[in-house]
Length: 251
Image (cartoon, rainbow, N blue to C red; front, side, top):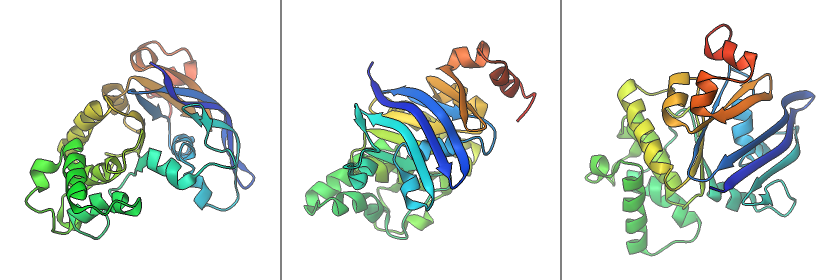
Protein backbone atom coordinates (compact mmCIF):
# COMPACT_ATOMS: atom_id res chain seq x y z
CA UNK A 1 0.00 0.00 0.00
CA UNK A 2 1.58 3.28 -1.10
CA UNK A 3 1.96 6.39 1.00
CA UNK A 4 -0.56 9.06 0.15
CA UNK A 5 1.01 11.76 2.34
CA UNK A 6 4.61 12.14 3.44
CA UNK A 7 5.64 14.84 5.92
CA UNK A 8 9.33 15.62 6.21
CA UNK A 9 11.01 17.83 8.84
CA UNK A 10 7.91 19.99 9.24
CA UNK A 11 8.36 23.08 11.43
CA UNK A 12 5.53 25.53 11.94
CA UNK A 13 5.72 28.88 13.73
CA UNK A 14 2.99 31.27 14.89
CA UNK A 15 5.08 34.43 15.05
CA UNK A 16 7.94 33.50 17.43
CA UNK A 17 6.14 30.51 18.90
CA UNK A 18 7.16 27.17 17.39
CA UNK A 19 4.07 24.97 17.29
CA UNK A 20 5.54 22.02 15.35
CA UNK A 21 9.12 20.78 15.58
CA UNK A 22 10.69 18.62 12.86
CA UNK A 23 7.69 16.33 12.38
CA UNK A 24 8.19 13.31 10.11
CA UNK A 25 5.21 11.08 9.35
CA UNK A 26 3.93 9.01 6.45
CA UNK A 27 0.24 8.24 5.94
CA UNK A 28 -0.92 5.49 3.61
CA UNK A 29 -3.90 5.27 1.29
CA UNK A 30 -7.06 3.54 2.56
CA UNK A 31 -5.74 3.84 6.11
CA UNK A 32 -6.94 5.72 9.20
CA UNK A 33 -4.16 7.54 11.04
CA UNK A 34 -5.11 8.84 14.50
CA UNK A 35 -3.24 11.67 16.21
CA UNK A 36 -3.36 11.70 20.01
CA UNK A 37 -1.78 13.81 22.74
CA UNK A 38 -2.71 16.39 25.39
CA UNK A 39 -4.39 19.72 24.51
CA UNK A 40 -2.10 22.22 22.86
CA UNK A 41 0.46 19.60 21.79
CA UNK A 42 0.28 20.42 18.06
CA UNK A 43 -1.98 17.70 16.67
CA UNK A 44 -4.67 20.04 15.26
CA UNK A 45 -1.94 22.38 14.00
CA UNK A 46 -0.38 19.42 12.20
CA UNK A 47 -3.73 18.40 10.72
CA UNK A 48 -4.33 21.91 9.37
CA UNK A 49 -0.86 21.94 7.83
CA UNK A 50 -1.95 19.06 5.57
CA UNK A 51 -4.27 21.30 3.55
CA UNK A 52 -2.72 24.69 4.27
CA UNK A 53 -5.53 25.98 6.47
CA UNK A 54 -2.86 28.13 8.14
CA UNK A 55 -2.62 30.27 5.01
CA UNK A 56 -5.67 32.08 6.39
CA UNK A 57 -3.76 33.29 9.49
CA UNK A 58 -1.16 36.07 9.70
CA UNK A 59 2.43 35.46 10.89
CA UNK A 60 2.53 31.73 10.19
CA UNK A 61 5.77 30.30 8.85
CA UNK A 62 6.11 26.74 7.60
CA UNK A 63 9.38 24.98 6.87
CA UNK A 64 9.88 21.44 5.64
CA UNK A 65 7.82 19.44 3.21
CA UNK A 66 4.34 17.94 2.93
CA UNK A 67 3.91 15.84 -0.20
CA UNK A 68 0.69 14.31 -1.49
CA UNK A 69 1.30 11.71 -4.20
CA UNK A 70 4.86 13.03 -4.36
CA UNK A 71 3.94 16.71 -4.92
CA UNK A 72 4.98 19.25 -2.31
CA UNK A 73 1.82 21.16 -1.31
CA UNK A 74 3.94 24.08 -0.09
CA UNK A 75 5.50 24.59 -3.54
CA UNK A 76 4.93 28.13 -4.84
CA UNK A 77 2.80 27.00 -7.77
CA UNK A 78 0.33 24.94 -5.66
CA UNK A 79 -3.32 25.67 -6.42
CA UNK A 80 -4.63 25.92 -2.84
CA UNK A 81 -8.31 25.77 -3.90
CA UNK A 82 -7.64 22.50 -5.73
CA UNK A 83 -5.59 21.25 -2.76
CA UNK A 84 -8.55 21.78 -0.40
CA UNK A 85 -10.80 19.95 -2.85
CA UNK A 86 -8.42 16.98 -2.73
CA UNK A 87 -7.85 17.21 1.03
CA UNK A 88 -11.12 18.01 2.80
CA UNK A 89 -11.60 18.82 6.48
CA UNK A 90 -14.33 18.01 9.02
CA UNK A 91 -14.26 20.22 12.09
CA UNK A 92 -15.00 19.64 15.75
CA UNK A 93 -18.43 21.22 15.62
CA UNK A 94 -20.69 20.53 12.65
CA UNK A 95 -20.83 23.65 10.44
CA UNK A 96 -23.57 23.17 7.85
CA UNK A 97 -24.49 26.20 5.74
CA UNK A 98 -27.84 27.81 6.61
CA UNK A 99 -29.30 26.32 3.41
CA UNK A 100 -31.28 23.20 2.56
CA UNK A 101 -29.75 19.73 2.96
CA UNK A 102 -29.59 19.47 -0.85
CA UNK A 103 -27.87 22.84 -1.30
CA UNK A 104 -25.28 22.00 1.36
CA UNK A 105 -24.14 18.97 -0.61
CA UNK A 106 -24.53 20.56 -4.07
CA UNK A 107 -22.53 23.64 -3.00
CA UNK A 108 -19.04 22.27 -3.78
CA UNK A 109 -19.90 20.76 -7.18
CA UNK A 110 -21.66 24.04 -8.14
CA UNK A 111 -18.58 26.07 -7.13
CA UNK A 112 -16.47 23.76 -9.31
CA UNK A 113 -18.75 24.40 -12.29
CA UNK A 114 -21.37 21.62 -12.25
CA UNK A 115 -24.70 22.99 -13.52
CA UNK A 116 -26.50 19.89 -14.83
CA UNK A 117 -29.53 19.31 -12.59
CA UNK A 118 -29.60 15.52 -13.07
CA UNK A 119 -25.89 15.27 -12.35
CA UNK A 120 -26.30 17.37 -9.19
CA UNK A 121 -29.16 15.12 -8.04
CA UNK A 122 -26.90 12.10 -8.56
CA UNK A 123 -23.98 13.67 -6.71
CA UNK A 124 -26.19 14.69 -3.77
CA UNK A 125 -27.71 11.23 -3.43
CA UNK A 126 -24.43 9.34 -3.76
CA UNK A 127 -22.66 11.70 -1.30
CA UNK A 128 -25.45 11.37 1.27
CA UNK A 129 -25.36 7.59 0.83
CA UNK A 130 -21.58 7.71 1.22
CA UNK A 131 -22.05 9.55 4.52
CA UNK A 132 -24.69 7.02 5.67
CA UNK A 133 -27.32 9.78 5.81
CA UNK A 134 -29.52 9.29 2.73
CA UNK A 135 -32.25 7.20 4.38
CA UNK A 136 -32.61 9.74 7.20
CA UNK A 137 -32.88 12.85 5.02
CA UNK A 138 -34.22 11.77 1.60
CA UNK A 139 -37.70 13.13 2.46
CA UNK A 140 -36.37 16.48 3.70
CA UNK A 141 -33.74 17.38 1.13
CA UNK A 142 -35.24 20.82 0.58
CA UNK A 143 -35.62 21.68 4.26
CA UNK A 144 -33.01 23.57 6.24
CA UNK A 145 -29.96 21.61 7.32
CA UNK A 146 -30.12 23.50 10.62
CA UNK A 147 -33.09 21.32 11.61
CA UNK A 148 -30.95 18.16 11.66
CA UNK A 149 -29.52 16.73 14.88
CA UNK A 150 -25.85 17.35 15.71
CA UNK A 151 -24.83 13.88 14.56
CA UNK A 152 -26.76 14.24 11.31
CA UNK A 153 -25.22 17.68 10.73
CA UNK A 154 -21.74 16.20 11.15
CA UNK A 155 -22.52 13.44 8.61
CA UNK A 156 -23.93 16.13 6.31
CA UNK A 157 -20.60 17.97 6.53
CA UNK A 158 -18.89 14.70 5.55
CA UNK A 159 -21.33 14.31 2.62
CA UNK A 160 -20.48 17.89 1.57
CA UNK A 161 -16.82 16.88 1.38
CA UNK A 162 -17.51 13.65 -0.51
CA UNK A 163 -19.44 15.61 -3.14
CA UNK A 164 -16.23 17.20 -4.48
CA UNK A 165 -14.48 13.80 -4.72
CA UNK A 166 -11.60 14.30 -2.30
CA UNK A 167 -8.71 11.88 -1.86
CA UNK A 168 -7.91 12.61 1.78
CA UNK A 169 -10.28 13.33 4.69
CA UNK A 170 -8.98 15.27 7.69
CA UNK A 171 -11.14 15.06 10.84
CA UNK A 172 -10.46 17.34 13.79
CA UNK A 173 -12.15 15.68 16.79
CA UNK A 174 -15.26 15.02 14.68
CA UNK A 175 -17.26 13.45 17.54
CA UNK A 176 -16.27 15.58 20.55
CA UNK A 177 -19.53 17.58 20.37
CA UNK A 178 -21.73 14.50 19.80
CA UNK A 179 -23.61 12.03 22.00
CA UNK A 180 -22.47 8.37 22.22
CA UNK A 181 -24.93 7.04 19.61
CA UNK A 182 -23.99 9.71 17.05
CA UNK A 183 -20.33 9.06 17.88
CA UNK A 184 -20.79 5.36 17.13
CA UNK A 185 -22.41 6.20 13.77
CA UNK A 186 -19.49 8.43 12.79
CA UNK A 187 -17.00 5.73 13.85
CA UNK A 188 -18.85 3.13 11.74
CA UNK A 189 -18.82 5.59 8.86
CA UNK A 190 -15.03 6.11 9.19
CA UNK A 191 -14.57 2.32 8.88
CA UNK A 192 -16.54 2.40 5.60
CA UNK A 193 -14.87 5.53 4.22
CA UNK A 194 -11.34 4.23 4.68
CA UNK A 195 -11.96 1.74 1.88
CA UNK A 196 -11.76 4.70 -0.51
CA UNK A 197 -9.88 7.49 1.28
CA UNK A 198 -6.81 8.19 3.36
CA UNK A 199 -8.19 9.49 6.68
CA UNK A 200 -6.34 11.43 9.38
CA UNK A 201 -8.23 11.97 12.63
CA UNK A 202 -7.32 14.03 15.68
CA UNK A 203 -8.98 12.66 18.79
CA UNK A 204 -8.78 13.28 22.54
CA UNK A 205 -10.38 9.92 23.10
CA UNK A 206 -7.81 7.13 23.22
CA UNK A 207 -10.51 4.45 23.08
CA UNK A 208 -11.71 6.03 19.86
CA UNK A 209 -8.19 6.06 18.44
CA UNK A 210 -7.79 2.36 19.24
CA UNK A 211 -11.21 1.56 17.72
CA UNK A 212 -11.03 3.46 14.44
CA UNK A 213 -7.39 3.76 13.42
CA UNK A 214 -4.78 1.54 11.78
CA UNK A 215 -1.86 3.73 12.85
CA UNK A 216 -1.50 6.23 15.68
CA UNK A 217 0.89 9.12 16.23
CA UNK A 218 1.51 10.59 19.70
CA UNK A 219 2.24 14.33 19.85
CA UNK A 220 3.75 16.17 22.82
CA UNK A 221 4.98 19.80 22.93
CA UNK A 222 4.86 20.12 19.13
CA UNK A 223 6.90 16.99 18.53
CA UNK A 224 5.80 13.64 17.16
CA UNK A 225 7.12 11.38 19.93
CA UNK A 226 6.32 8.16 18.06
CA UNK A 227 4.04 6.66 15.44
CA UNK A 228 3.26 3.00 14.99
CA UNK A 229 0.53 0.49 14.21
CA UNK A 230 -2.27 1.32 16.63
CA UNK A 231 -2.26 -2.07 18.38
CA UNK A 232 1.49 -1.85 18.93
CA UNK A 233 1.49 1.76 20.11
CA UNK A 234 -1.23 1.10 22.70
CA UNK A 235 0.18 -2.19 23.99
CA UNK A 236 3.94 -1.86 23.57
CA UNK A 237 4.88 1.79 23.02
CA UNK A 238 8.55 2.33 22.28
CA UNK A 239 8.81 5.58 24.21
CA UNK A 240 8.27 6.06 27.95
CA UNK A 241 6.45 9.36 27.35
CA UNK A 242 3.88 7.56 25.18
CA UNK A 243 3.46 4.89 27.84
CA UNK A 244 2.96 7.53 30.55
CA UNK A 245 0.33 9.33 28.48
CA UNK A 246 -1.58 6.19 27.52
CA UNK A 247 -1.58 4.87 31.08
CA UNK A 248 -2.87 8.24 32.37
CA UNK A 249 0.23 9.22 34.33
CA UNK A 250 0.14 12.66 32.73
CA UNK A 251 -1.86 14.72 30.21
